[in-house]
Length: 396
Ligand code: ADP
Picture (spheres, rainbow, N blue to C red):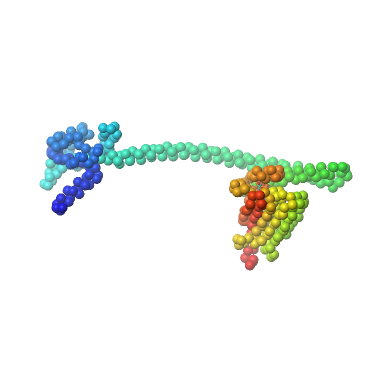
């Protein structure tokens, strides 16, 4: 290829690629030369050599004064961006029209150079972007409205939650005083302080007492759960011998195991260090796990309770293993949720409102430990709780 042809070919290729056509006119705006107009479906000239520029590009009708300014050299450039041109099929094409004075080698203006750029693809894209931007704006607006609604609902929920906590707290407090009085007088009656009890009176009074005890337990659970929710549950920490504490809790719950002829196996590793616990709360955690193990296990089953050093440093681990109904995999996530009771649990034990585990897990976490479980439905469960060692540095 002759080297002098190269720039011309390059220019042709670039113009074709960019979808640009051009026309050159004389000073009367009569077209002298045009590029190949066939390479753009939209940017084509509606006339050719020998015709007036305005006939070749109808969009310039009305711009005659501007053309004169360009020819006079008083205007260096004229551009009409995003000009719409309707196509035979009714669709819209977008053109950018540029007009420049055309100079000869001597620098004199000999006419005009018209550049017609087909920017339809860009225009369509731009239109899509604008449309999407508008849709996005509408969605943002909708999102803002929904957020405001959600915020209002949340505020209402918070208010109701606070009301519920306040109600639980007041109700539980108000229940405790008369219940304490009832239990006090029951004790007097059962001790024979008001005279000997005849017939089935003692038996009936024991039933009343155990019902009063259940009510007291429920009111205490409601109070604890409210305290946990409002962050007002404080621990009184002290060095605690968990082995001794566990033994006492088991003794206290003895009648419950006896009633179901359940066997308790107590295992404790030797030389366990004291833990830093709130004694009453640690006993409450143990009591809840043992009570559940008994409640959700059949008569004559065995409950194994183990205390040993936990796998994680600085903790002692309690494990309460039963041979009970177990926990289905789909109940796992809800087990520590307040008021949750598995359907199977409801059938096996009417007592309980589903607050015990929620409170126990919160108490364990307040101590810095963890509460979790493993279970095989139908075969039994093991609940684990860890308690922090009081002085981990002194333990080897
Ligand atoms: P409650 O015993 O008063 O229902 P908890 O909060 O102590 O409440 O326990 C919540 C639920 O967890 C129980 O209702 C029962 O479905 C399940 N659960 C707890 N412990 C056991 C266990 N040892 N075996 C089987 N299910 C258990």
